[in-house]
Length: 103
Image (cartoon, rainbow, N blue to C red; front, top):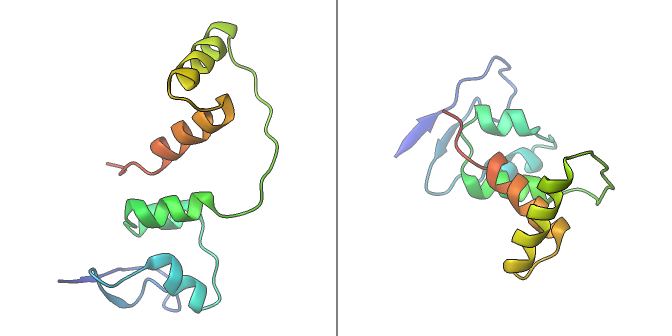
């Protein structure tokens, strides 16, 4: 099965015909010396594996945000029930949300 990705930039890695069974969007972009953004992955109909691979890349950074105490405590309990840390639970929730197919 073949799929043609249309993109405004003719030099884009998505201006090429890909075999869906063999295509790895991130690897193709990397081989061409190009870094992709999350939005480009979504627009290119990247599969969940490619998106998750992209999301797990990069260096670790500290993030601080404010949430209601009840939400934090509930999330801590949910993480504990799953046998994971609060941070791991938050990463998992973000990964799940960001790797969903956008309608």
